[in-house]
Structure formats: C-alpha cells, structure tokens
Image 1: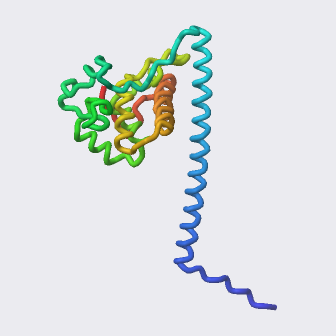
Image 2: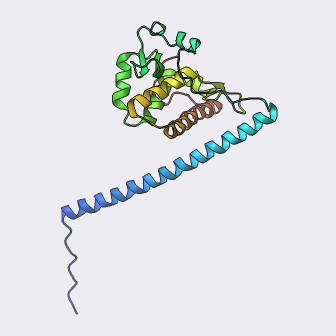
Image 3: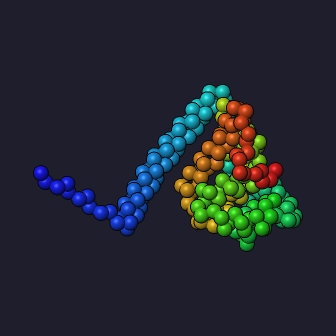
Length: 213
C-alpha cells in the first residue's frame, strides 16, 4: 500500500497573493455591476423624461420646458442683480471668480468651498455635494431641474444650478455631455428625497447634516 502523498505546503506569501487576486476579481465584478446599474438608471431617466414630456404636451401643447442654464450677461439684468457680491458678503463665488459670466455668488463660506474643492475627486460628487449646500432636502424632495413632471415638482433655482455647472466646469473642465449626465444625477437625488418623504422616512441620511437653506 502506497503511503499518502504529502500536500504541497502553502506559504504565507502564496496565501496573500491568492487573497489579493480574489479581491481584485471581486472589485472588478462590482465595478461591472455598478456600470450596468448606471446605464440602466440613465435609460430609466430618459424614458421618464419622454413620458413626462408627452403628458405635458397632452395637457398643453404650447407648454415649453423651462431652461435650467441661465448664463449671466450684460443683457440679463435680473440675473446680474441677484448675482452680486453684496447678496452674500460672507459667501463665495462658484465658478471662475474673475469671469463675470461664468460665476455665481452663493452663501457657501470660503472655508466650506475650499473643503468641497479638496474633498471631491470627481465632478459628479462635487455637484451632488454642492446641491446639498445650496438646497435643503425638503426643497430637493419637491423639486427638480426642469420644474416639470406628474408630481407637480417645482424648479430648482436656475441660477444656483448654473452656479453648480460653472463651478465643476471651472474645477474639472467638463463637457456638455458630462453636464447632461450630471444633471441626471441631480434629478435622481431629488427623486430619492421625494421617495423617502413619500414613505415617511427621514430625509437626512444618518451621518449627514443639512447644509444651507
């Protein structure tokens, strides 16, 4: 009878390498799933927008979608009057502080804005964090960028939304295609707040705090 064969000895280095390989594989699978979810979310958003557009036209064929981009220029006096340093003396500029047409004055303190600039690695994360600073969750729950929809949503302040665009463009140099995707993320966050309110859940997630009104 042959003696039992000895099992190959597994060194600590081999175990570590095997665990790292498994971790790398698991992370890649999570990224693939996340990418598929993001694509599905974008398709759902576009479908929802088309349905809402059809419903609005059925109610009033002459109705036009409000514009969410409100660039400031010398011809837009109402925009300029609401976009002056005196409006928020203790606040700061979103966007290029040296370009009058690509900046928006807001109530975010210079210290908080510096924190935002240093803590957000992507334009998407910065846009959503700025959203929390500029609009409380109650406003998010009853609003969206366009101010349209079957739930009678209000329109988020177009000047503040333009400020978000100015700032992430200034910080990251985003394209119009990037901005369209980020607007979907903003609307998605507003829908999440709306759904939480509908279910009677707290609007402020544990570990977060309200920013500004």
